Image (tube, rainbow, N blue to C red):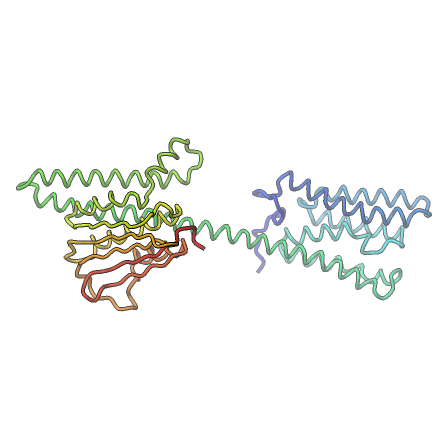
Length: 389
């Protein structure tokens, strides 16, 4: 069944929602009008030089076709009918002009109609354009109809090619929107999941020592406040990235506070507040990472630490190592928790691990995660220094 979402004016460069931009419409008109004047107009002048009154009438009909082309993107069916009738009239007045040449304007309009209307409409127009083919037998011999049919078929096919190209462009745009929404969902998941996990544990710790050790409870509450403020700041920065009308000052603040490997210590401090010891080790220059790879590395570490806090039973120590090695940066997060054994079929099946693997893949890297034979869980990612392929 034919899609009916194609709008009359889709399928040509410079289009805007609901039709061509005025500049693109003028360019299409001038281009097609110039083609008709150059080819058909010249043929009419040559063929009608000795035909008296037929020449000026044919010239007027040619100019009428050029004028009708002005509306071919708005009403291609009507313009096709007008150009076909006037073209046949020109051919009847001056048989020396080939049928293909006399109906050149109609073929141009057929191309536009094929690109912008549903296929069932363009196929009917194609069939109608093929009907005059037998008329060419009288003036162009046996090859005349075939030459005309080939010209008409090429015009229709060119329109179909342009239509398919535009449909691919729209499909790519829809896919980009879906991917961007998924990326935003991952960003929100990373920020909220990590911060809330830490806050829940800190709140539990504060409740346990609220009476006996009130100062320690206050420290836990302050850590909760700090974590909440940090999460809100990251969410604001994330949402601000999708509002290009924000001021330059907001953009500068966003760049300054955006998640980055340079802020790993802040991330480690929030985990240390839960009672887990975090060992950080950075080796080599990580500032050469692209913005996308830098963000991916930070989120991978954040998700790995969140998994340690939430799922690593008995974990009291986690090691984070970031090493720049030539054209890639290696990120390794290892905890000493009693992670339940998971077979190959289930390793990486969790939402967090899937998100980490997808982040690494999107920037051209790779990620492996799984339990260690001696206990604990390890996440290892390798990310390219430049933009992912």
